Length: 400
Length: 197
Image (cartoon, rainbow over all chains, first blue to last red; front, side, top):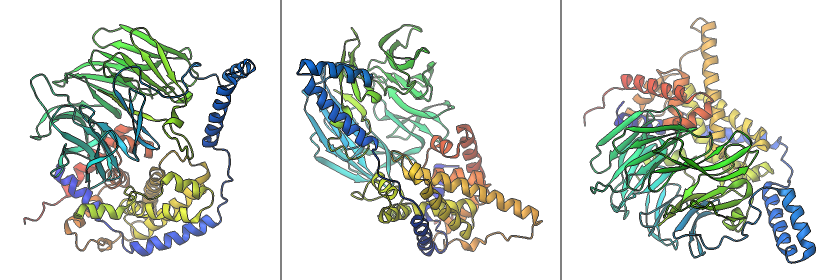
């Protein structure tokens, strides 16, 4: 079936209105409303949001007690009782340990955290992405795609034909923005002008622009086609440069090395490393439910794994030499895989930011000497109003 | 607004305008007994749920029953619903699984009745008078079995990825892919060429 046929199919399904649709909706609502009248509403109870608020209050008490000798005993007692997270975590997210800015999505929207400790809430957006030099942030809200300054001003906006499910600003200087909407990968110019062009239908939200190569090749993007094959295509010409074999499980992310020579394909429980010509150069298993991140230089990966003895480890491994790896951060945990979020490299490749949702902490870990700088209470700091359940913020990228 | 945008807007479920109350808030309010919140959830999701059921079972009365029952089933399980998860996939899982069951049951009944018990739904049942091409495509879809139709509807009407479909239907991802591929191949065979303009 051609792409055009698939578009006919999609359009036809959308246009296929059941007979008596409007009356059916009204009948449906009457039936559902009556059923709801018989439904016993759930009593208000202390949800995790309240528990989190209590935790904040407890944290405040701890800070107060820390000033007095008597309080020290109480602090130790509470730490023993909670027993999760780095004990000496900083209470406030201040300056970053190295240069760059971190782009974050919390339930409250998109944030930019600067290395000087300042932070800016850009607004209620999702699918945030850095522009190549961190001058702009791309983000979406339903069908609308926005280019924002890091101060939150809207530079331009376009409306897509369907809800935007993924968004990625080109990694080169070529000014392109790719997005997934309506099951299709589309590309629009980086200044928001022109009509979005359709590249292909896709099976995954994982997309990744190839960084500009040494010979100046631009506007190439990796994505996952309808049949779970990784594809590298030139978005200007529409030419497919290569397609992989189909893979057996969901592809959760695609990541290029900075030089555009290696592409890491992350699946559920494993990862494949391709070279720029589409040859699979490395395959390996990683923990299910965890994440693997390619270092900017493309020569190492960072991943979290369970060691089989109730301990989680952040490991950095050489992709060229099997078995050459270092444990950067071991942590006893009975939570198994998924205790930590995806590790994120700093732009200079010297630090890793490791999210620890269970402890509500971020850990900045220096690769050279495993120095750990922990920051506590991340959820509240990036969702100051704390309305309802807190959700742990997602790190989008640590940029230049 | 082009025709596709307009049509997608009519589906509604995933395309709530900016500024409307967050779904999580609606679910919480509904859990606490707010009929207003329930109605907004219902209005957001009815059309997609009803249409999905219809395209799997190809029977107007059956689709209406399935969509109603899915909402009622969702209400009864509302207290156990995890608000951090989106409401749509939860509802769609119920709708599509019930639609498949309904179609299987109808087939079984027809076999018992030796072919003369239940008439096939008439093609004219579709309100597609102004969409001749869409009419042909939807009729071609009918040539597939309900399991294949369900996967095609989840993929192309409700915009789920194959991995998400596998989770929704609790079947292996490879099965989703093979059903999609087989469904699309069959549809390509059934689809007539477009009229020259």
